[in-house]
Length: 217
Image 1 (spheres, rainbow, N blue to C red):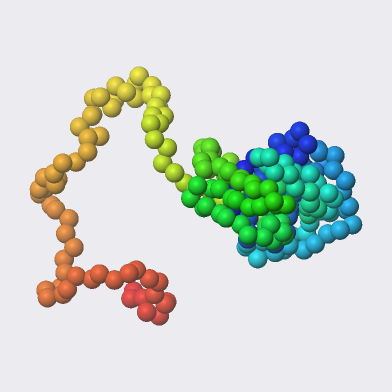
Image 2 (cartoon, one colour; image 1 turned 90 degrees about the vertical axis):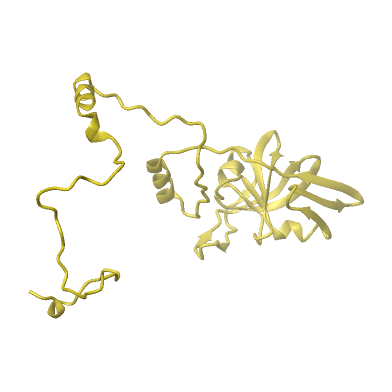
């Protein structure tokens, strides 16, 4: 998969070139805003990666897409695709013939009518930090699936808690209680012990539920 910017008319769109997609897809919202000619009677059932079946919302005819000097004219099935506005799948890739693809540098080379083209994909992506509650709400609403990456955000100071003067005075007064332990506790008059039957080996098994008749009263 390779991601890059393209244009439909004067509208900038996010394009995914995906050899794992059988067809070309366009977000219905983008198609509507661009004023494209749509045939709502043409619908297909699409099986996505999680084996769910989705139905397209029509077909946009003869859409002109420009990408870094290369222009294509194709029909696009309308489907709300997450993370991009337009997907170019195997349906488009098969029409190009021989393709040179450098996955590390995110470049794609091909020839059309004797003209050589090179598409440069994005090599870095902007990361955004969201709260877990917002992410869970988004996951519940999403029907196709979400790709997320958990990363450690560097150079971020932890939030400071506002503590009232009274609580701060108590913490300072009994600060020895809040210090991290550095040694074992002292011996007391009565130390807690678990007596074992002499010669019994230590029990080290995973806990599991017993049946009622196996329990000892």
